[in-house]
Length: 234
Image 1 (cartoon, rainbow, N blue to C red):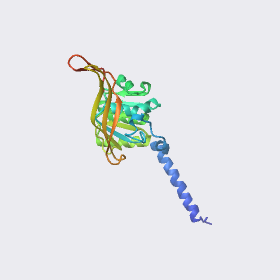
Image 2 (tube, helix red, strand yellow):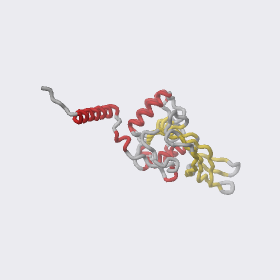
Image 3 (cartoon, helix red, strand yellow):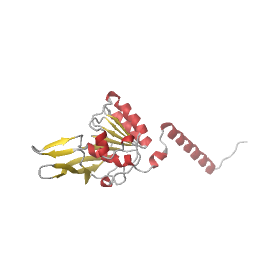
Image 4 (cartoon, one colour):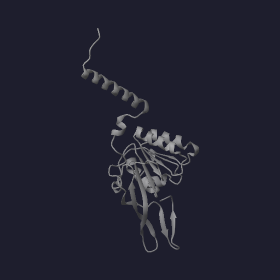
């Protein structure tokens, strides 16, 4: 004799099966909801006006005009315990990273990934919280789409130099001014950036001024208005 089920019981059974199927998919692709629900990664107080919600997990941030801004975006998360990778950025070394606040014990540098760029980036997105990408990496548009999807699945943040199709946030440095010089000599102490903030999740483009500590090895000396730079400060 067949067992009759009420409409409510049948609906509950379908809902239960749907939940089980979703859990199975999340398990297979590593996209558990916890990756989305985890708090955003922190930013230093000087940068919160750029991204008031912090570094939201799963997003891609495209930065043009200042490598130092990319490092600064990752610094507070690094200090708080996050792992960071810099791929295809040969001018960024341990000195520049440390001076920007990156914790070196949780930093991976892959300056020249070559033809293996997509594989290197994918591996880092799988295991790192913040992944910085150089502008000249050999990545196709399809590679970039897969990297973005992987970041969403894993709950990481990708900060990419240059153009990135469909970036959630775009930070374009439109002007830069240094201060700190004395009467012909001294150190470059501070850098003021004017940044245009746009992108899919940023709403209408707006301009924000931010200050970065510019004392990262740049020195102005007499005579001849020459600047000696220990490592990249751009």
